[in-house]
Image (tube, rainbow, N blue to C red):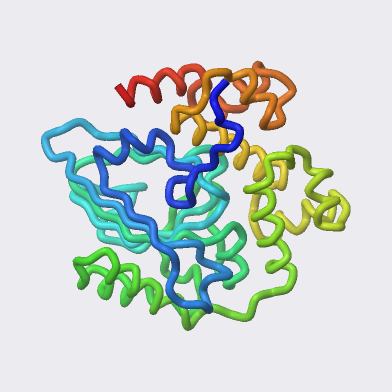
Length: 285
């Protein structure tokens, strides 16, 4: 068996499915936020651009953390049922985020930490929903933000515009939210955490209290967050070429058996682990 048990995707790649294939099609950058006031709420800024003119669409897929994204989007064709350019708010995605890259397009976005949008006072869209940004975060002038971002060509400059627009809106950090972030970090990094009761014990609260905390800030259950992190670990290990034994991978990440792992992986990622492994191997040839 290969040494996948110690493999961890770097923050810049975590959750991106088929990263090698995606890198050949679209230029993706992920950058840390600049303003210290935003660090508790915003995980990073990211940008992507593509040109599929005269070529078939490319399906981009991300098994993302359960956080909200605020994006400034342009392109030759509408996306998410919205005419572009536009400032959009992407709600928490319950499974994987899927978008077909067609024509030409460009996105600059702020990825909020799980619960960070709510902690900043934002009104979250429904799960998987993408809505115009006007009126969903007090103090944010979506029209002015759109104009300011589009005036910049450089990705770093565009991220700086987003940062400058969001930083004055950052409130004090609620203590419950600060504790939640520490807990979420442990859930992402500690692969021995595979059950909700373990997480509740770590937090020093009951399971019901933990569930209420996640419902208030994150919008999905702690069980769903745990499963998402372990599936991210599985996909990252497969993409890195560090998996030969899927049954061993399933056991190490807390699944009862390979059948349960395969069912959960397919439900969220869209294909079985064996099919994903075959595609990852073909992509390195």
